[in-house]
Image 1 (tube, rainbow, N blue to C red):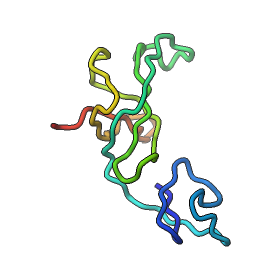
Image 2 (tube, rainbow, N blue to C red):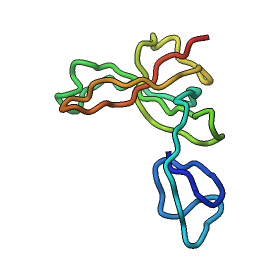
Image 3 (cartoon, one colour):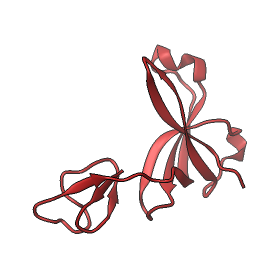
Image 4 (tube, rainbow, N blue to C red):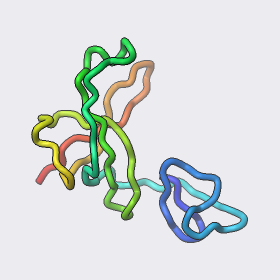
Length: 113
């Protein structure tokens, strides 16, 4: 994640100026995060608007708040969880799936209790 070198605030997606301290000049570094978080909200996509998604439809896109900082949220697919088991606050962790052409795509799976 992008971290402000002045105040340590984490931001995603990356921004040109820290939204907390507004430091001038801005300075950022990249910080590793745990990949653990809680499901804030989600939607179930039932129509494949692009042919490449036909094989995975229906699928869940979730907004996950990472444990490192309140309000630090990322949007990604949530996989391996029955749709009826989704609930706000569900503990999740990041995993990576093959995105083709040597890329890895982040997804979230249920965290171990």
